Image 1 (cartoon, rainbow, N blue to C red):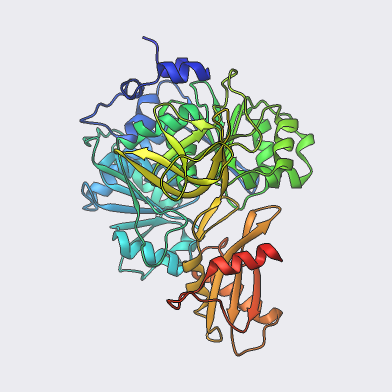
Image 2 (cartoon, rainbow, N blue to C red):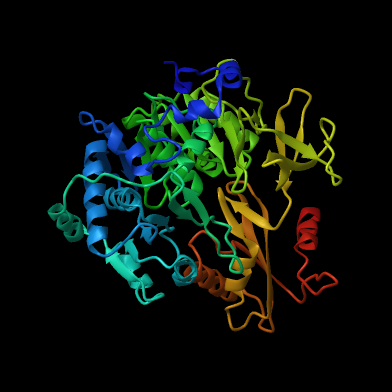
Length: 514
């Protein structure tokens, strides 16, 4: 029987795709399905490699499907012995490593809900999410355990060597009994605000829907060796970088620790990866490192997501890897909708374009009245879902050939280095400084990160370098390491709307004019 993974062309994607054919790629069905089984257990034949982890310190950690299948089964038995039941939440705050994958898949194997948390979260970032989802356990390392202990009375488990060795007393076999519509993962977007700390709730059947983006957004096919350096704490690193390729039995590469472009380039060479999906900033950092020519590459498909990629970096990707950078665009509400079909020889990748819709999805650029815009006219990108048009809050345009282009954000979300950040959350952290009276945050252009956060601060204290450093350090300690304002302007007042709210639109306009 011919499967969707047997087709590689753009024409076949349009003619052969159907939702029913997605289900043919899995063991489970519409009633019963388990992500851990689909991603790990069914691929244990032989000693096939599941994950190659490139650690920032230069180490390579190689994990087989069998090792992860047995380890996750033991972890599932451990959770059951701890009184964890189906539907309970288990927070996992670890870098890619054997303990991370064992805990992640073991949680889902039991029928509990995995909640991946970013390892650079400070106490406020952890508390916000812990209080929202009330996990039974938080699995982390010794360093982060010190930060998390005492938050929400949660039990903190340190997944060190002693803990992992202790799992050996549990059985290496476990048969999942989850339904397809049971929840599997609660994932917080990087832009979650303080006012609405709501997790995106994914069921086990989400792995099936995800395969649409995997096939056409990252071009995944059995036999690929696929690297995604994005953190699995976020959607791209988890769903597109981890679950989708593993579900196809593909060997994946993951990055652990502080990102270093040359370390990634060396891993691409040493392990002969053939497919990579990363944030646009990752490619910019590879270009700026100035060492790409020292290594040899085997890549056949290259894709990016999170933000538009600049033209100079596009040229670098083509020159270095011999293939164009293929865009993959989507939102939390709509999923991936526009792609550039990496690996499809009959699809022309247009520089600067978001590509064309994935099979079976309708996308339009609409004006303020909800009418389609003419080619070349900027409007809001909208996606047809559940018998209505869903706004993406992004601006865009479409050309005569049906290629879509990004026109910027339509709201106050800041995208920096592929991370989606909330202006409200950053402002809240800045306001914790006792000398700050008012604060506003916006994104301003940056040649490396696309955007960086600029904070406007009102204070009776004179603004100087010391004051700026205090604010930066405060935000780093309260939120995440990447969310601090890299630019700070001390002002006497902030522009306000008639309702008294800070008018960030005016601030952005001033910055653009300047």
